Length: 78
Image (cartoon, rainbow, N blue to C red; front, top):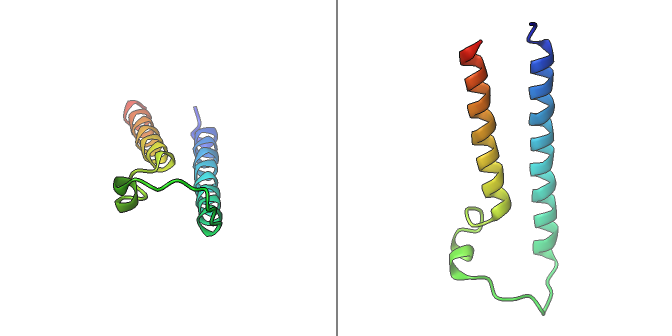
């Protein structure tokens, strides 16, 4: 089998992931600029670790680890 389709498929998924990451950052930036007087107080733990406690970033980190492991697995068996 040629690796051309696999490289294209991997590149496609990486591109989708990067685009999703930047779209998430842009939405978060817009939301941080919009001040609503009815917003609830943010917990101290989330305020101190605003990126680490964000579930979206946790999903991106776990997905990156999973995809990287899967790619390494396929490289090792072929």
